[in-house]
Length: 94
Image (cartoon, rainbow, N blue to C red; front, side):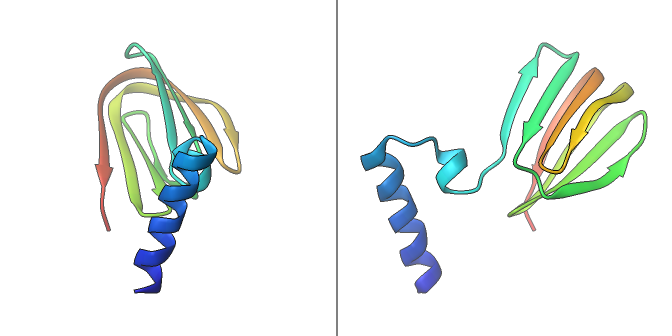
């Protein structure tokens, strides 16, 4: 019950204070430019990387990106910039 109450409080604060949900609810922010760049903020770590697949840990679940010719251009503790041909972005629930 405490988890549900906390979620409701976060939602209320987001609406009343006009804050972005990714900040108040600890959600990832994903920015894509066409099929060639994807920038993910607020992830919890890199799980898998190949030239065809990237898997990131999120607070609730994982993010799977599939494609071709992947290159990590920037990687920071909570941010990553991936370049290549992106075919699929899938959110996996735990």
